[in-house]
Length: 427
Image 1 (cartoon, rainbow, N blue to C red):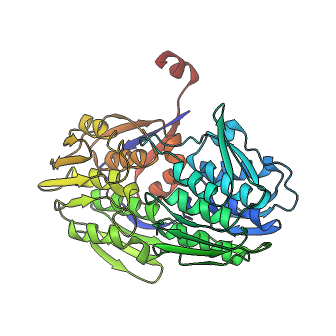
Image 2: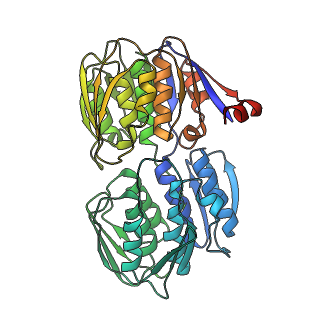
């Protein structure tokens, strides 16, 4: 196990290149199953969730060849298994996308109840509702989800809640169903559009991604393709937050500025100076931040994954901020860690009242989940002294080379191996 040791107080300056979108990659990799051929997927982020997805594909029978650190050739011509092992399924939430992809190609799938961050109840009832509407039967036995169908037939599906996962899983299952599928009340996030674009490159007929209604006309077969994944808007937002809180000056490369609009709007309102270019963005901040009101919502609202990072920023803003979490009920668990650093935050249900303080202080911290972990890194970069962050495996799930990227921007951060005997004593 490792921990991050961070000496804060250095303004971040320089250039950073953003990797591929985690939330797109973990759906596009299972989508290669539908191709039944060779796919070359570019701009894959080098993160643990992607490595787990590639391992699942390999265990299912796919041939995988690494072309570069961010490009892989995946040949799913000879898949011979429709069951994802319990061990791999539980490593990440997004393992459920293998249900839709395997069901779409083979008419059956078996995946363990997925793992991932503990952000509160995240049922997959809307996923199963879509599969059932397409003609599948489902069951849960010994923690394994099983879905099967003699034939998948297009259907009209209205989701009870807006769900990114259910939207993308329904797309995977429907692209080769017989007839027309209409999905209503769907998620509109950029990674939903990215999956649709990739499926269409494979020969699918998907229209309307990015709107409230997606129409999918089933095709008889699909084929391999070459596809480059969009940049990660949350990784970009995270480095924007790090630049702002350290009063730095950072240029982000390999981004799509339009995908960042909800984030840049709030950053500007807080007092940051942001210059946008075609595929890059420069952010600088040379003053104390202004307080904000933020409520997380489905896209195009403010993204829930940025909420912990913005709360860290607002913890040192000049005044009182209100942060309302509109997606996940357990997203404020990290606040106790910030309070240890001297933050003044009161949480009542889904609302946090943040009274800005002059300075955060170093402390021993835990990365409770992926985005909370990134928030702890940003907080430690602002604190005047040395902080240590444990359970960094959560962070590595979604941020490639985060230590190296921050070091290149002038941060004093390093990975330190935790001796096994120390871990044993702590337990």
